[in-house]
Length: 122
Image 1 (cartoon, one colour):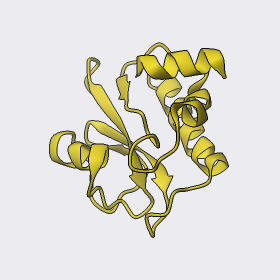
Image 2: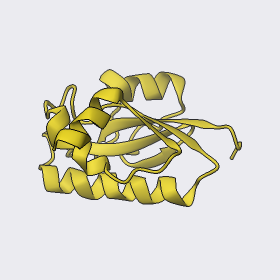
Image 3: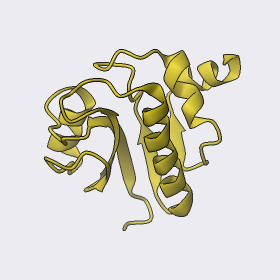
Image 4: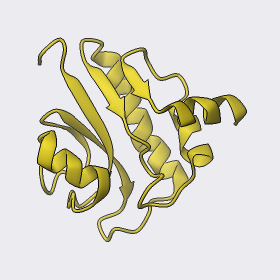
């Protein structure tokens, strides 16, 4: 992988449909792969926030997927990750519910300013 690669991190569903929102953007612009619901794909990384039937996952399950991403980012300091507000758009969770899951993110993760504030408050 390119040392300067910017990886677009988006919320996905376990079916890997990538039909709306940031997932569709990742499909069209960052090499996301249809039917792959989690992990690296092209210049993107999918974090599941919905199940195979497109029902929002429970927060503890999303937290498990977020931790997998954080571990991956830590293992790949040569990559830069642009983390979108996964779970806060079409899924409907709030910044205050999702942002704290990203506490301890590494310097190669670029988090939305609203999330940095939410992490301080919650």
